[in-house]
View 1 (cartoon, rainbow, N blue to C red):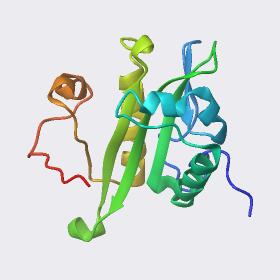
View 2: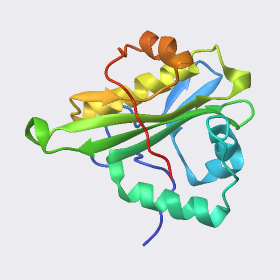
View 3: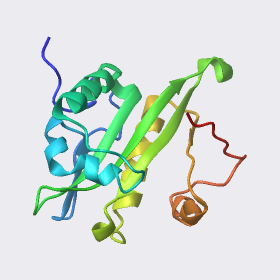
View 4: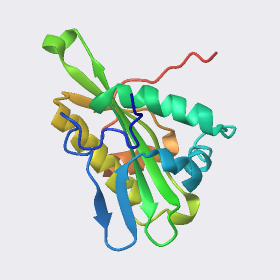
Length: 170
């Protein structure tokens, strides 16, 4: 079976946020593609959390796993149209619940904009597209965890502070 080259690209139930969108002439927001490893995807993620580079084999294997989840796992990237490098990324994971009559919850994860591209609205556009994807999938809410410093950014995107985040790391 041939491995897909883009996540949730035009597939059945891909949702409202999965297509390609141009932001002026500067950036294109689209689903992650296999070729994005060489466009700086891992370097971008390393701006969120220390992350050693992935081999091409490891990247392709994880990409295939995520592609198999279909529209329940969407990663969007913002590509600089002039350079072809990635300037931003974010992910939406759809959790299938028993509560709320087998409801769906969207988890917004790994939103990052390259330090050199911040302040241009890319983060807001990525978040908006990912939230629309969750809405299109029928999620009854979207949740996220963030640092205190990013609360203002997410409030600007429509999120409100609720509950307490806790973690157990291994």
